[in-house]
Length: 537
Image 1: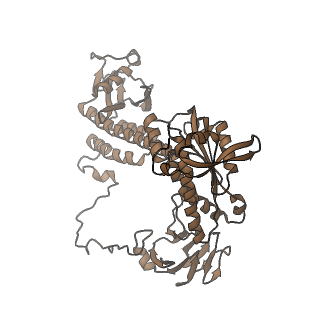
Image 2: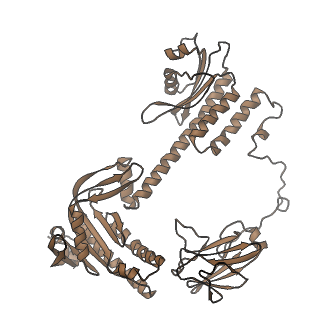
């Protein structure tokens, strides 16, 4: 399928071998095959084009502004048959679809922009390369020597060859480690009892992860810790002078074999075998195989632990980036290693911002347009807050509650909160101007700032925690925001005490429902010295 997209004065051609194409505006959480960005009149999930029983169809997916096919609106009319060179209008973009099944079959990508060049696929003979022999890389049996089929050597070689496939296909240690033990049982059948134990790095406890035994499992913690400490594998018998725990002696185990799980010089656990039959013996080759399997097992354990650590850190970082700048998020992780629930009490600056008249205006807008407008403002305001060392406590509908001086102490949190407010209003003016030129609705913000003592920290659970602030200062800050008019910044007297040398402000009075009349200061501008970075004394 070949689709030509025309938007204003630009044109691009997209090709895909997919039988169905969703078109709209792509975002990180909702990737779209045919991304019509930057057309803001296109919905996120606008429509789809697909092939069914040899016929091409188009359907509008309940978009905000609909889809026109040859000048006829098809929104809420179900699927419509498509013909070559039909004109499709989506927002301010025109689409034309060409059907070329032969060409689509040769494409190897889902989405090619105009100008992408692919080398044509060639058979080996045509390219001048002759394949003398090939082997199915997933077929372990084909890798075994043909002259030792069925003997111990072949069985052990098969196990060694099969272990990497086990590591690749088993995504959880709970299934991988028992599978490794099962492989050992088959390769060294004279072992009556098998066990794989991992060392808990936090508690130093030995955890039994997998075992196979004809009776009870008898393990010597002394021997396990010895093989890990010395990073040496060994075979023992009752008759030899080896320190064996009384429980193993009483169990009747006559011979045993222990090997550490060593990865990058660190012992992660132990694989061990034992037998009650005094006629059983383990050979040097048995011990070497156990060591080799221990290396594989250690690599798997280390890989899984690393993946789990990265997954947890990624989840924590993603959660932190919702409220903190990347710099602060990294500091939180590096300083504490692991975030902990709890809080502390200190003075911070509280900034509240709110869009004036937004609720009333939003009633007459499509839901997609409401969220699009909010996101356009937030894309400007959030970076400003982060750039001034602020933290997003929460989004309150069309409002923002930001904190300065937490979670990391900031002796200049008053100044940073003030500068953030002024830069936020400047950013809103630029966004409004751009939306005005596009003939889109726009509104102004009111901002209030207060400072005071709060309790702040992380609440929730170990798996799901969020930063928050609590205290009367938070409520008092909301009063100044509620009283601020469009394009206005109101600060409290407490805040004014700290920033008077940087700002020109007019004293005023605001009325509140519960606290009565409060004194406030309306910010006019930063003083010239403050703009140049020179403090006024």
